[in-house]
Length: 447
Ligand code: PHE
Figure 1: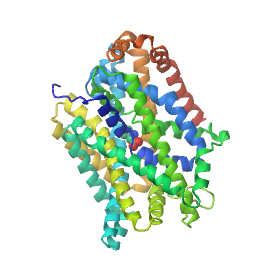
Figure 2: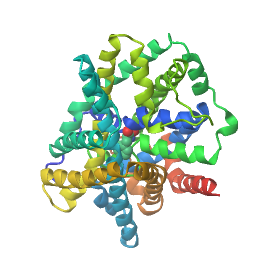
Figure 3: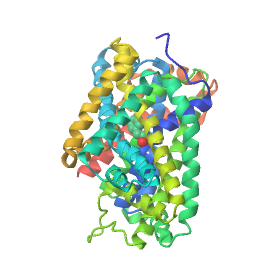
Figure 4: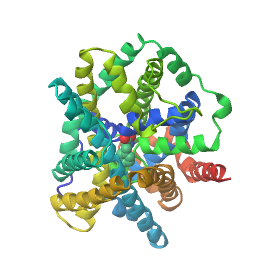
């Protein structure tokens, strides 16, 4: 344990945790959800649920993590007592399983990002045949680039999380943001964009309580903030005791929402610009076609309208997306790897490679059975598992861990916490309101 790293500063933590939070969930997943759930109504419900449910759970994870400073199973055990140890194991292992399964589908999409990046490079060199192979769905392409993405993820994780993550997230994430803002400015000049913005920004309030929409928004809120798998617990374990956790958590949540909203401001109008230019996006019944492929259809169509500059933009965009995916995938792989290296005493390098290759095998199974397995794994992990494991985290901080100890942990970084708003609301909120809300929402969606 002596070798556990710590983030070098508050900014480093915010960037790393935001690096985990910001990823394909914001830029690939969020626009798909918005487009298939009727636009603004989804955006509205998602933002509300992030504040009502995701932020409180994020705090539960960060506080448990910083208190225990170890892998997720041992962390939850550290805040449980005699009778609840069984539940602690169940929660920890379920989180590890969920993190691994998320990585198994995530890396397939990330592989597409690498392939599209290389596709634009190939086009730049005039090799259109190669470009076509790289940007079209095929078994071979999916296997190769998913494998390559694992290689990158495992290499970074095996060299230690704090150093690896800090190096990557601090420089490249801000670039992605700037690029998105520039692209949003560009799209405003295109015919059709205004229609996209109208649909995106005007919620149809009659839809916001639609059961399917609410469950999708709940899953998206948890997935986007990397909750319900133990990632944020591990990141919390690398935070110095002198930091003010509620503030740090709020910073990360706001940045994450901000990036998702920006991605929507780009992709949804891009969809309508593409529609305007004759690309087919909806089927006759008005449903989104090939939703997994949404950004790979509408963004390249947008880049094409830019003439030769479009190629450079495409290369930049897909390489930055690959980086954004990497800063998230390393935080997923870290969950099983921290457990294998700290609880099972496997060396970090060995743990990273053995766990990584095992999860790679799952990805390959999904690739071979893409149409039947991909959607299933996404739904099982993000829609159901993440909120349910999040609920268990609430049970631990609300009902099992002693409240004076929780306060003591928070006070380390904010001595006056007892009198602050956070402490007045949060403990009872995670104890009663969060579990009840999650149960109600699931009930509502099943009935
Ligand atoms: N939050 C990440 C994203 O939006 C995904 C993620 C989920 C990362 C769970 C870690 C754990 O892309």
